[in-house]
Picture 1 (cartoon, one colour):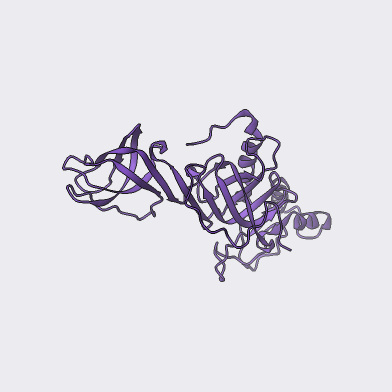
Picture 2: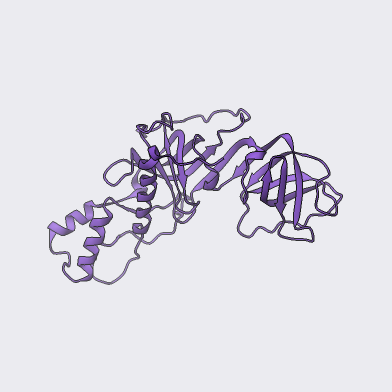
Length: 305
């Protein structure tokens, strides 16, 4: 289910690794009575969600090395906003991400890394196996407020240990299913989610974590109640439907639609860095139920007028 990185993917790996550096440099500073600091972000301090409900990204530094060097000069007292040869490059080295327009992009996943908090998705409009294809990198907000949705259908037997699933089944007093499972749903529980205990001899909705899966045998761990392990048999054509929000479920070849703010100038990764407010992924597995297309879908790389 997971894509194995190949040597030809080295540029993408480097891209996903390097872009993480911007997270350490995106910070806002509140108003203060101290002397003006030309190296600091002079935006008003804001939370990750603006008053109108949009995501607040803050400042992007085109060159992390330049910013670090200038901050060091300031801390050493070497400059106090008097040398324009220094202060002008400082201002030109940064811009406000929120001033970029939001655009919709579509493509195929090349690779993914991290979590909902600051994770990355590399994708392309061309063949994802082509090492020469232009690659965009969508980055999720470091505060975890970007909306990530993973949908689609795969063969249930391809799921991995650690996956949390929801299904309907009847088990006996020993935690063994009385009938094969035809379908289940991959979910992402909230941090404070507490599953219900499992009762024997009744049809119930069971939410548990996959601890072992081999062939048609599925073993789930339940974190409450007397029955802590549930053993189930998957039917030959059992299907797992995704309704999740975890980057670990995003794989090579999946379809992706990203809504975000594109920066393709200095400091951008690959064909461009997209500061994503929404990422919708459709698994490249079994055919999905056909849905009406979105009314407007911009081609990859297209910009708002």
